Length: 226
Image 1 (cartoon, rainbow, N blue to C red):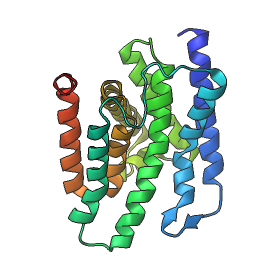
Image 2 (image 1 turned 180 degrees about the horizontal axis):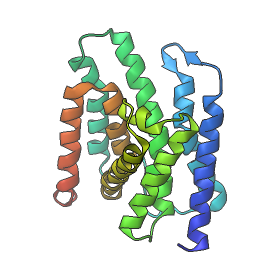
Image 3 (image 1 turned 60 degrees about the vertical axis):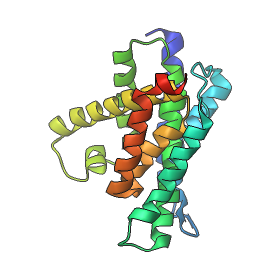
Image 4 (image 1 turned 45 degrees about the vertical axis):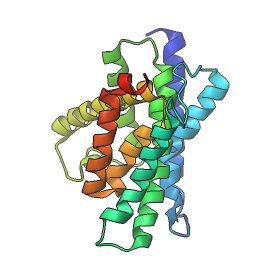
């Protein structure tokens, strides 16, 4: 990897790590039902990516935006992903669902902007295997900015490091490939945001419906854009 390619990647990662580390040390902050501290932790990658775009002049090679190539499709899926938890989750209050949906969606957007918007563009030109393994490794290491055990934080259970770390890096690299391909095709950062947020806030039914739509969108994209 050339120096010109590696420096923007390294600066981005250090910025994302340090910002999230600092945000995680803040006292608890809520505005109404929204956990602002949690959102700020997820937005470490967002602020770092935004700064790198501004000061390092990394181009948006892939023309990634909110609307993407098919705005009606993007916003239709986003609206459905935000609505479904209220229609399919019945064991908790509406306010609890609203808090979870808002917090996790905004949090996930911050992460996805960093990993799928900025870092996708910063790694353009790398071998695809190297590209997505690199993003997966950096994404995993970033989790150390707010937890001593990223494996447990992601899996919800203790797993020996010799097994858990390679497994976690492999899964994050796989997600980076799948969601990265989704972004490249649709050019929308909101679609991987939806995929990221739903496992945390959407419930099984919502997740199944929206993930099915995302898969159909991804595999039939050439037909959609005709």
